[in-house]
Length: 83
Length: 106
Image 1 (cartoon, rainbow over the protein chains, first blue to last red):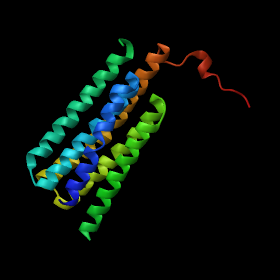
Image 2: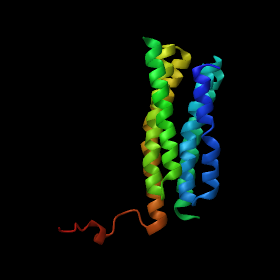
Image 3: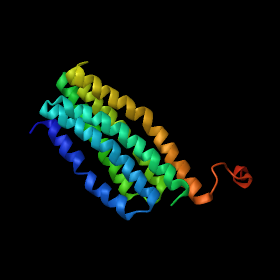
Image 4: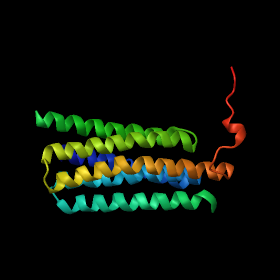
């Protein structure tokens, strides 16, 4: 296991606590945790792409970053008035 | 020399994200938590820079750079939208009320 994969494992281990925070906290605070997870997950995928020397994981990281940005915007706008 | 720079960027990036996550989990309230999401962007940029320094401007290096730039651009937008949504949720209006504009005299 090289240093990239170690870093990826460290970052991936942060995702379960953020998922618990999303489910337990107030909705807006959960959105903040979701936004942070939207940064951590693509970076972990990028580190895996570098660690395994697999290009497609980097594409996946880019797609995930764009989609999580759009999803967080949608959640914030939705929670603004409707919930 | 390049390996030292790569490891330094990688370690600092992971440390930034760890601190950011600890802050988001520990702080009370949505505004306090929002402050700590910015540090994660810095960490993501450092990790993207580490990949780019190691791979130069290859395919994966360019993607890492693009990812870092995207996070640096999108994070302030996301923080603003979330803070705005939290304020509207609490007070029902985005703009400051007249009494909030008044400056208290010492």
